[in-house]
Length: 501
Image (tube, rainbow, N blue to C red; front, side, top):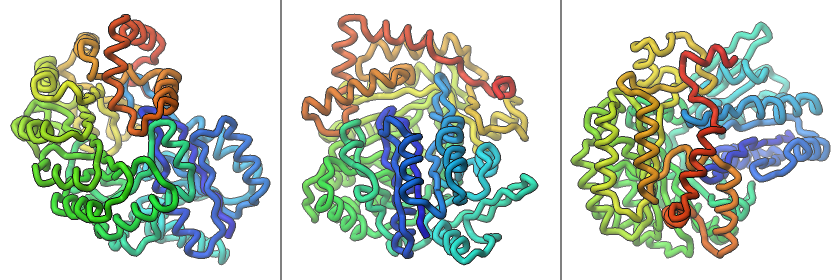
C-alpha cells in the first residue's frame, strides 16, 4: 500500500525533536513491503501547501498522523496544539484524499479516545506502533474491517470509542532501526539546536505522580542490546554524519548496569560523534557511570530531580532524597560534561518554604556553569498520581475532560507570591531560567540561528548562561520578561477549562 506518514509537530522550543517514533513506524512499514513517504512539517513554511502537493503527487491509500504532544505542558503559557493539527493537517487530508487517517504518537497514546473524538478520526494506534500499524495496514490491504488487535483504537459510527491493550514489543533488537536520518533532514534539526536521537530502552519502572510513560511504553523496562545501539549509531554516523546523537530514554541511567554496558560498547567503537542524553535520574549517578560516559563521548546530560525538598520529593513519587541529590552534585562536579537540571515546582505539598529550600539547594550545590530550569505547575493527565491528588482535593472532578491543558498547583501556595519568588530568584542568576524565558519563539529561533552561523554545534543550551549574563548587564532580560508576562495567557486552572471550551 502507499502510506503517507505526517509529522505535524512544529514546536521548536526549547529545541526541535526529530520524530523518532514515526521514523520507527516508517521503517517497519517499508520493511513489510509498503511504499512509504514521511512528510516532516517541522520547518516547512507552508505546511498546507506541502500536504496538498504530497497527496496530489503520491495519492496515498493510508495516511498516518503522529501527535507527539497535545499541548506544551507549560502551565503559565499553555498552548493547545490540537486545533491547528485538526484544521491544517487532518481536516485538509480528509478534504483532498479518501484515504483513512490513522493517529498515533506519544500524545495520542495518553488520551486516545479524547483525541479521536476531537479530530473526528476513526482509527488510532497506542503503545509501540511498529507492529500494530503494520497489522492495521494488512487488514486495510485485504479489505478486512479491523476489530480487536493489540494497540488498536477505533471510533465507531455511533461515536463510541473502543481500545485494545497497547502493544508492547518484547524483543526490541528484532525491530527495524528508526533510520531517522533517512526519513527527515537531520541537518535542519541541528541548525535549530536539535539532533539525531535514539532509544536504548522502552518503559519506566518509576511511578512519578505527573508522568505518563506508563501509558506510552509500559511500567517495565524492555532493553535493547548494547551491540544493536552501537550498530545504529555507527550506521547513522557513516550515512548522515550527525553532529550529535541523543539517547532519548525515560531514564538513561536506569538500569545502571545497562547504561554502563551501552557506554562501554560506544567507547569501543570510537565513533566521531558527540553524544548527549536526557533522563538522568540523580539517584543512580555513580563515578563509574560518569567515567564510562566520558569514554563513550558524551558531552552533555539532562538531569531531572524536580525538587530538593524531601516532603515534595515524596509527594512527587521520587525514590531519592535530598541527601542523594547532594551526593550526585558532588560526583557530577568532577566531570566536564555540560549539565542541564530540571525542577518542577508547585506539586503536592509544595509551600513557599519548600520552594525556597530548592532554590537554596541549587545555589549551594549546583555549579554556576550548569543550566537550571524551573517549571511551575503540573499538567494533569488522567489516572496519574497528580490526577488522584487533584480529584481528592476537589480541584477537578473524576470525570472531567482533561484533553485541554489543565494545571495543578499546590493548595498551600499563594500563586502571585510564588511567581514573584520564582521570577526574583531566576533573574538573579544568569544560569537559572523559567518558563517565561522560553515564551518568545522568535527570540529563541534568532539565538539558535546565530549560534549555528557562528559555527557552534548542538546542543546550544550550554550557551544560555553567557547570553543571560550579557543581557542582564543591559537590563534586557528583565524587560523581556515583563513584556512576555503581559502578553502571556493566564494560567489554565482546572476550574477554568469548562469556560474555555
